[in-house]
Length: 270
Ligand SMILES: Cc1cc2nc3c(=O)[nH]c(=O)nc-3n(C[C@H](O)[C@H](O)[C@H](O)COP(=O)(O)OP(=O)(O)OC[C@H]3O[C@@H](n4cnc5c(N)ncnc54)[C@H](O)[C@@H]3O)c2cc1C
Image (cartoon, rainbow, N blue to C red; front, side, top):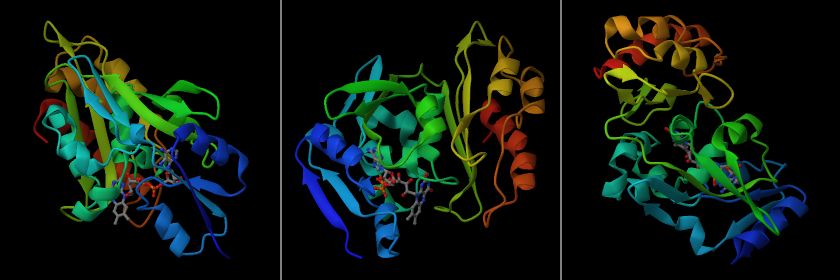
C-alpha cells in the first residue's frame, strides 16, 4: 500500500488536513513514525508535514521558555540558556536520534519513551494546539492523559523558567549511555526558607504515559530536603503508578527501585 505525503507551508493548513484526512499522521523528526512506515503499519495512509518556521522557534527569556514542537533534542543541547534541560535532552537516544527527535514527537512517543515529556510535565508546561481556524492551549498533563493520535497537532510548548537549581532529572537505564528508560524522574522542587513549596514530580515509564507523583508531592510540602524530610514522600513514591512488564524491566522492579532513585534525586546524590 502506498503512503501519501502532503507538505504544508502553514501549520494551520497542516492541522486542517490532519483532522480531515483518513489515516493521517503528523511527521515530526520521524524517528518513530518512519520506522512504522517502513514496517508497513496499515493505520498510516497519509503523512502530513509542515515547513512552517514557527515549528523550530525557540525563545528563552528570564521568565519564560517557548519551544516550537519541531525543536530537536540537539537544538536544545546547543542552547546554553537551556542548560537545566540538557540532562533531559541528552537522555533521549544516541546522537543520531537526538538530531531528529523533536519535542512534539516526544509527547506522543509510547512508554517507555517520553523522557522529555516527563520533564515538561514536571515544569507544568502548556501545549499550544494548532487548528484549521484557531489555536488553543492545553496543560501538558491533560494532553498526556488523552494522547489521541492523528487529530491533535501540537505547535509549541511553553513554561515558566524554573528557579535556579530547583529542576532535577534522572533516567535509569540498563544500557549505557543511550538505553531506553527503566524509568525517568523529573522534579521541580522550589525551596522557601529551607522548606519545599509547590513541588512537581513526574515519572516516565511508570504508566501508559508520563504521570505526576501527586502523593509524593503532597508529602514533600513544607518539609526540609534532607533524609528525614523526604522519608514520607519516598514511602508513597509509587502511589498511583501503573508500570508495564516489558523487555526492559518488570513492573515489580520499576516500583522497587523508584524510591531509591527518587531519594538520590531529591538529596542531590544521583
Ligand atoms: C534508537 C531509538 C532510541 C530512542 N531513545 C529514546 C529515549 O531514550 N527516550 C525517549 O524519550 N525516546 C526515545 N526514542 C523515541 C523517539 O526518538 C523520541 O521520543 C522522539 O522525541 C520522538 O520525536 P520524533 O520527532 O522523532 O517523532 P515522530 O517519529 O516524527 O512522531 C512520533 C509520533 O508523534 C506524533 N507527532 C510528532 N510531532 C507531533 C506534533 N507536533 N503534534 C502532534 N503529533 C506529533 C507523530 O504523528 C507520531 O505519532 C528513541 C527512538 C529510537 C529509534
